[in-house]
Length: 229
Ligand code: C5P
Image (cartoon, rainbow, N blue to C red):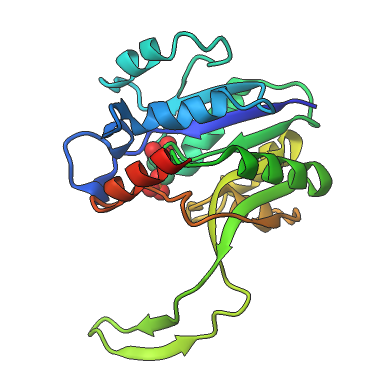
């Protein structure tokens, strides 16, 4: 079996409040998207990487040129309005005949992913069919009403924060995405799509430094973690 990576990078990053989508902000002289793609493109267990890009994205051609030395960077697929649609477009563009290959999905905005974590989540997917990186919740969780008052404290035992990479058997992912088309709520990660379709997904303990660059204050942290890895 081979491992194919899809990197959804078609979001507009509204929470960052910058003019550029967050995947094109720079860390240590290169865009976040380039850092993320390079980590995957140079990983020994990944066969090829397919980015999903918004049509007419003005920043992509330059980034693509700077990654030209990687023969395993596949032509981009067009992004959709929802993340789920972007991923479905990526799976379609892979056009895999075999159902046994694995598809690894990784957020464009998680540039600090480590080689070892990629290895462990792929190994778990080999065994179980589906696996994701996640970290146990460390903070106390509150349910809060619209007026800012706490309604109750949520038991955090058994609760994990889902990260990416998320890795699935191609055939199962394709089927689950098909099932998800009829679901009213778009999913915020791929594991939930597989869960809804009844497929088992295993959690592999990840690391907090695999952060998702979401808000302006995340940039300095991501730069620090990139340098440390
Ligand atoms: O918006 P959010 O932070 O959940 O985005 C996670 C990842 O999904 C980002 O890499 C973003 O570019 C991507 N995305 C996408 N297509 C969308 C929305 C988000 O590829 N329509």
